[in-house]
Structures are given as C-alpha cells and as structure tokens.
Length: 165
Image 1 (spheres, rainbow, N blue to C red):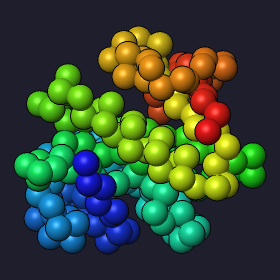
Image 2: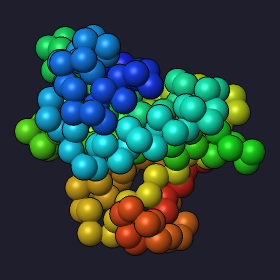
Image 3: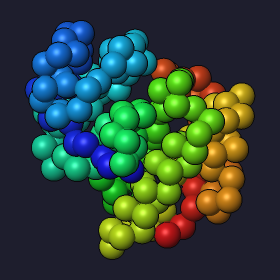
C-alpha cells in the first residue's frame, strides 16, 4: 500500500468535479468515486481543517494505491493529529469494485502502524455504524474494544471502538 497525501488544491479540484486536475495534482488516476457526495463531504471538511490548522497536514485523509499494480483502491487516514489525550481517530473507504479483497484490512494495518510509530499517540479510535458489518469484521483481530456510541450528524448512530497503542 502506498498513501498519497492530497493538497488543498487537489481537494478543491475534487470539490469542483475536476478529476483531470485532481489526478494531475495527486499524481494518480482518480475516478468518479472521489467526487461522490460522501467523498466531497470529506474533501470539504479536510480543506477546512488545513485552512484553520496547516499542522494537520500528513494526518488527514489520503489516497490509497495498491502496490505493485498501482491501482487506486480508496482513501484512508486520520481525522487529525493526536489530541491532548493522545487519541487519533482513523477512517477508510474502499472503492466498491475493490471491496472484499483485503484492502480495508491493509489500510487499517498501515494506519495502526503509523499511529503506533508516533510517540504522541496513546489510543487509536474508529467509529462504525452498527449495521456496517463489513467494517465491523475488518476491525476484528486488531484489539479494538467497543467503548460507547455517538450520534454523528453526517453518519447517524456510530459505535466507538478504541485500542491502546
């Protein structure tokens, strides 16, 4: 897996449905999956984060490329740098045609490794809709423990899982 960081310029191009410019900026071929309503919500949120705190760069959502074939399989990353308690929350999304092939698990593995390698991180969190059986299965075996639930304005009810690092 290779992660490709997105600049604000790239995300703005995606928000404008300009896949050609976004692909050129990112250096990888992006598809319509990256300009869906859900993806655009992510890009807008991340652009706002970078604008208000440029120090978030490197912690936010990135494009995921499977190696060695070079296929863009989705996007993944953290919701931001570690907070005051040392917690980072991660998220991932796999393009439908690449689902059920181990890419989500590979993304999760890479993100947890990144978190473990960062001295400031003490806890990794993931939130998942209770009916998202695929994501619930993906996190099994990683040591995540359900610690509660929350209501997300965008996604509705989410279960909160955490694992210490």
